[in-house]
Amino acid sequence: MTVAECLFCRIVSGELPASVVHETATTFAFRDLHPQAATHVLIVPRAHYSDAVELAKGAPGLLDDVVLAAGQIAEQEGLAGSGYRLVFNTGADAGQTVFHAHMHLLGGEQLGLFGR
Ligand code: 5GP
Ligand code: ZN
Image 1: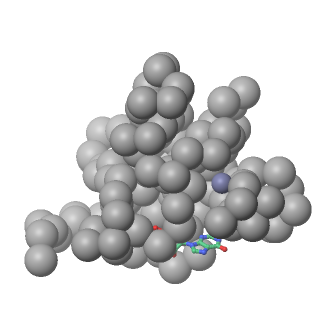
Image 2: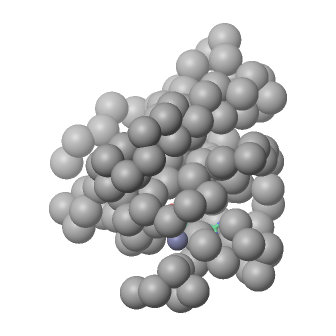
């Protein structure tokens, strides 16, 4: 897949619509189309990396930017006190379906344990 075909690159560029909740110079965050919790936000680096490990290898510091953005969004959404979950699905077995690194921020309710 080329970057031009990447769904999240197209959302970051504004070519496709999204419910944007937060932006920085290096990150972009929007609500998940199919929320799995009361609050479900996706935080992506503006630059294209296929997954979290490629992101960490390719751009030192950018993963920090994604996590720091999540913290700011949690404050903004009123989740900082009650807690929230940050998840990177990485590869097929984890159910990764969009191969532009993205961190899920889930919260706003008591979350179940996860695993299989
Ligand atoms: P993954 O399974 O790759 O970790 O997560 C991809 C996420 O992207 C899924 O939770 C899915 O609901 C969400 N998603 C897929 N297509 C779109 C879209 O066009 N817009 C938004 N906002 N979310 C999407
Ligand atoms: Zn992309």
